Structure formats: C-alpha cells, structure tokens
Image (cartoon, rainbow, N blue to C red; front, side, top):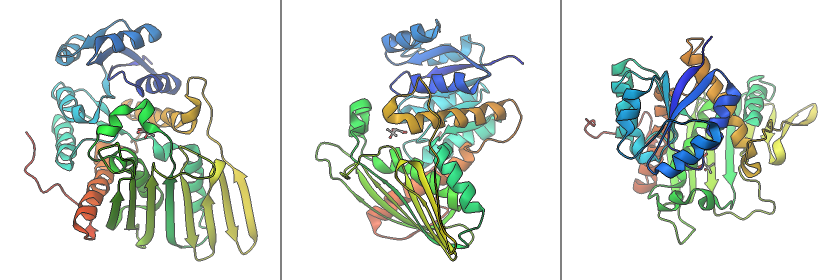
Length: 352
Ligand code: 89V
C-alpha cells in the first residue's frame, strides 16, 4: 500500500513533534512544507529531507502544484479557517490543529465547507489519546465503581508555557481555548456530551492578555453527571507535574482516581487497587512534554486509518464542534454569569 502524501502548513514549535508522530504512526509521507517565514520551513525541511518549501502568499501554489492526499494545518489558530477553506475547495481532506478556530462561527463554517466539498475534516485533538486517560476510561466503563454521580478533572500547574509558545501570551482568550479545548474534550470522552455548563474565569499572570485560570461545571452524559473541570497555569503546587491531568470520579460503589505520576487507584468495598499507567516514551519527544507528545502517535494513527477508509476517526470536525461549543459556551457563561444550555450555537451570520 503506498504512503499517503501530505503537506504540513506551519513549522513552529509543535510541528517537529507532529511530523515525528506522523512517521511513528506510519503509512504517510510529508512532501511539502508551508510557513509564513521561509527560513523556519527550510530548517524543518532540511531536518526531514523535505525540499518543497513554500512561504507567505504561496499556500495556493502549494495546493495546486503538489500531489497530495491530505493537508495537515498546524499554523496559528487565526489561519485555520482560511487554510481549511483553501484545502476544501481543492477537495483535499484536512487535519487541523486544535483549537479548531477563533470563533464558533468559524468552527461551524469550517465543518460546513468540508461537508459541502465532501472531504473529511479531522481535528488534531490529542489529549483524550493520552495512555493514562485511555486506561482510566476502560476502568470507568468496567462499572466496578458503580454509577458515577460526580467527577472532577484537574489540570493545574505553573509550567511556563509561554517560553515555548510566546503567542499564547497575546491571546485575548487563552486557557479555555488552548487547554479548555483539551480538557473539555477529555470530559466528553470520559463522560459523554454536556447538557448545561457554568463557568468562571480569572487572569493571574499580569503580563498576558487572556485568562489563565478557568473553572467549568457541567452536567454530562445520560445521567446528568456533575463534572467540574479546573484549569490553571497560575497554580504553584508542591511538585510541578505539567502536563498531567488528574481525574476523580465518585460512584455509588466506589471511587476511581487518576492521580500524580500516572497512578490509577480504584477503591471499592473490597479495598484499593493501585497501578501506574505511564505513557510510552519516544526519543524525539521533548521530555517536558513526553505525555502529550506520545499521544500524538495514536491520534494521528486514527486519522491514517480513517483516511484509508478503514474506520471512523474519533476527533472529526463534527465531533470537535461539540467541544468548541463547550469552550465558547464557557466564555459566554463567564461573561454573563448565566448557565448555558447545550447545544450552544454561534448565533452569528454564517461566514462566507
Ligand atoms: O497542546 C497544546 O495545545 C499546547 C500546550 C499543552 C502547551 O498547551 O499548547
């Protein structure tokens, strides 16, 4: 079976790990790179032996000249919508970075553009693919702790994310878009879709534009489970454990916990079972991001099998739209002080 040929748009911090993840997943070949600044694309091209490099103003030329099976859009969020449109117009399947877009109206327009062009749109949402979260979900679904009645997802640290990704400082909407898109998606993965949400946001760092603390309370799934998601980049804890996510679920027959250092503890009337579920380690991963970088591999392997027509991907545009409704619904709730009922729609005129 021949490799699927793709072009990567965006050669910033994340792209080199994503590229390594594609080759780890297998069955693909990156044949061209696009970046606003040519030198950065050339640098990545040299490292990976990709000699077709395009820069500012040449996105259309790339799509028209190169023979592609799909495009991977890994650029800053404000360019996702225009690049997805360009690809859809050429009937090219798209993998687009999270968060999907800067507004819910843009997210809806991206999904509509791909649907009209009859091409798949996948959102590169990797959090739910973290090994400990997959294991946690399997244990939750075993039913041993009984019917859950309350859950808490806790992503709280003081990791200096701005050092590697300085643009995050400039976002008017920061933690809910950058991490909320992951955490709220993980909540959907674990507990099902939300019916209502209520959110608070707060800015602790004085030198950033957006919020770096957010709390979202939702009712989720068939049994309207109460789920509280806590997110912060301003919380100094005894041991800094970026980028770990902790999850606590209380059920009628017990308690399930994903705690520090990938330990899962299941407590029932029989006692507590504890086991560590660490992620796989890849030599190309940045050690500070091991957990997330490892999750790129199964995320992208899921897209490869879907692109080959061998099954449905989890994080399609349609699916991720529900996560983005939670993200933008949270901003609406934080601004208005109101409980938001899902589905939450943009309510704005659709974009051209
Ligand atoms: O996954 C991400 O989107 C990254 C990070 C984990 C650093 O927030 O921006």
